[in-house]
Length: 203
Image 1 (cartoon, rainbow, N blue to C red):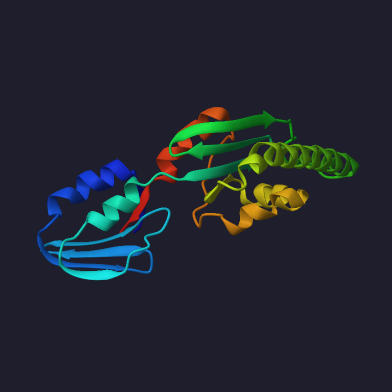
Image 2: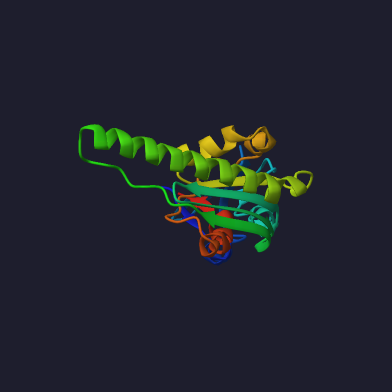
C-alpha cells in the first residue's frame, strides 16, 4: 500500500542502502530499488527526469530530485473557507485566507427545506466567487514563475472556484496529481502544506 513520507525521512530510510549490491531502475518518474531483502518503489512529488538502470543501489539522482525546491501555487477550498498561497521551496511568500458562513445540510422536508437549500446555495456561490477573486489576486502575479500547482480541500468546491474565473485557467496545466485533503483551509493548514508537498510516495 503506497504511503507518503517526508523527503528528509526518505533520505534517512534509504541512505544506508547506497552502494549496496542490487539493481536500481529509474523510469517513468519513479525509481525501483531491488536490494537483498528490500524491494522499494519511490515516486518523488515533482517527478524524476532521469532514466537509467544501475547494477547497484544508486540513490544520487533520487536524492537530488527530492532535495530540489520549487515554486508552487496552492489553492485550498471547502464550503466555509479558502486559502491561496505561493511557496518558494518550503517558504510561504504570498498568501490570503478567508472564510464565509455556509449553512450545513438541512434534514427536514417541506417548504422550509427549499428555502434552506436556496439560502445555502446563495452562500456557497458567494464563497466560490470570493475565493476565485482572491486566488486570481494572489496567484496571478506569480504566473510566470510557478512550476506546479497544489489543489486541496474539497474537490467539488475547488472545481467550482477554478470554473468561476477564467484568470485561473492556467492552474490546471500545472496541477500535481495528488489532491491535498485538509479539514479547514486556514493559514495554519497552508503553512503546514510544504511537508506534504515534498513528501514522496513509497511502496
